View 1 (cartoon, rainbow, N blue to C red):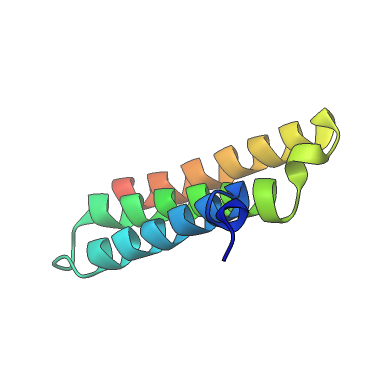
View 2: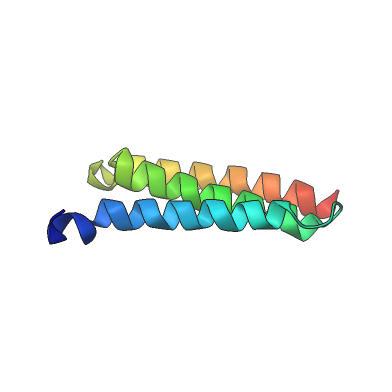
Length: 88
């Protein structure tokens, strides 16, 4: 295994995604009824979605309009979902 593979940004993003998955699984094991835990899991899911879209679907190389559309969409949907878990 070469050192280039170990320090590849995509590998680092993949490791971050795996850590976020583990943290989300830990939050899921908390007692039921914890609204903040559900909100944290949804927040992690939004972060993971951003990483996948930016790095693995190469949105970083897309025109800025597409980046702004995706960012706005992700922010609105995440706010609605997280808000619904916190408020209800």
